[in-house]
Structures are given as C-alpha cells and as structure tokens.
Image 1 (tube, rainbow, N blue to C red):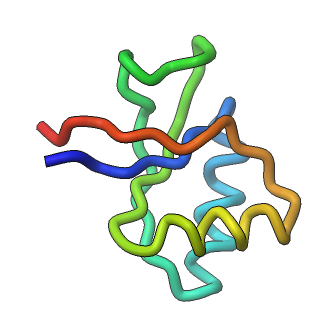
Image 2: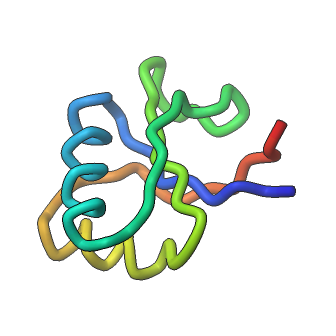
Length: 75
C-alpha cells in the first residue's frame, strides 16, 4: 500500500504546513521523508491520507513552500 506524502526541505516548513492544514480540517501526520524520496539531506514529510490535492491548494494559498508530492510504500 502506498502513502501520499507532501515533502518539505526542513522540519520548520513541515510543522507550519501541518498546523495550517489541521486548522483547515485536514488530517496529517509528520514523519521523516523516506530515503528513496529524499531530495535534500534533511527531509520531513506530511502524510495526508485523504484529499492531498486540496492540501496542496491550501499550502499554495498560504505560500508555504514544499518540494513536491510523492508516493512511498507503507511499511
């Protein structure tokens, strides 16, 4: 089973995004970016189980930078 992740370059951006999304009613879970998806040495991601497209729209609206959206195999 794959998990959809929104990837960030730092934990600061990931936490800010998590808080904005939670305030918008979107469930998220903060985690380290899996090695196969890492773009930078320090990577954190938000797992968004539902409606990742809406989550990305909200982040864009709030001008929160993210590296991209990826799929990771759930362990």
